[in-house]
Length: 177
Image (cartoon, rainbow, N blue to C red; front, side, top):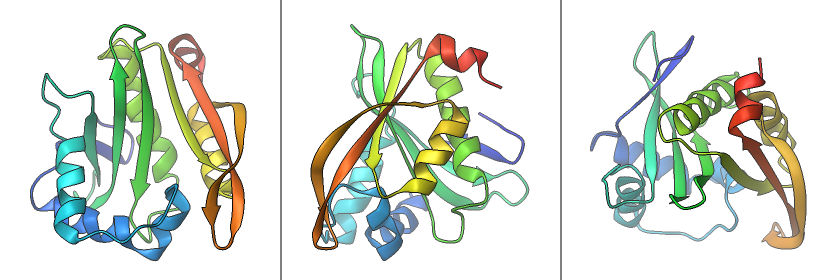
């Protein structure tokens, strides 16, 4: 899948150590429910599973790379894909230095296009922490709508925080700019 400045491609073994390092770095805390140190091999296995894209998997994942230099800048995933409801949950992680440059919006739109046009999904949902204003704005730009909140379910930096629940339907996405 190719956009104006990015493409989504199969995750390679060479991507795994980089993705693993980003996932355990301080900046990734904003993108996770809880921060738990994990061994590098464990995190690499997690990304390998998310990106296997096998017929028996409920996960579909891709590495995000720039078109001009093929630089790895992140990873995106649809997980818990449920054929009977034609739904999935969306995640994205961008590496340090790649946040706030429009890459998240473009990669999200590419993944949603794939979810709706190729996988035949109808709703795609996500959840993010309420303090992650930048992510909420990016998700809204990509087509998601805030659908609700789960109150004080994330403990981070000594405080409880809400989860913001967001979703987009296939018909809403196809009508989005």
